Length: 105
Image (cartoon, rainbow, N blue to C red; front, side, top):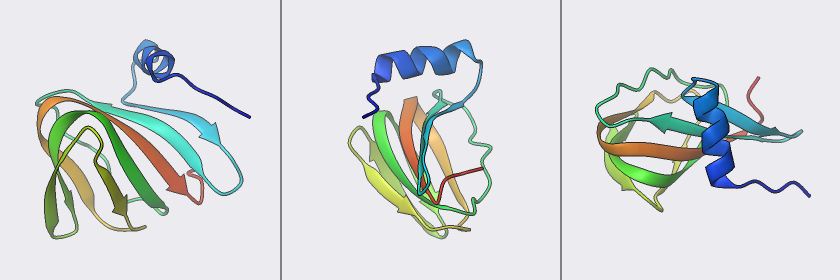
């Protein structure tokens, strides 16, 4: 078993000066913590893997392809592989758990 604490993951992510911290990689998936602060721009490009986002905290809009939705704590969104997507209009610091399948490189 592997167990993690969100506060410890956030501290590790912040200490490494990165928006993304991958903290688990297994044969069929990987999991990370993605952070964007209020007003920040999301630089990500489409990925080769399917993704599931679980918003841990914050508020923003998320556009996937041509669809846009508002996300906040507890929101869960699937992003198909290869699909353009961006968080935008981030009004509260955003912390998102990201599951990639298959695992990201």
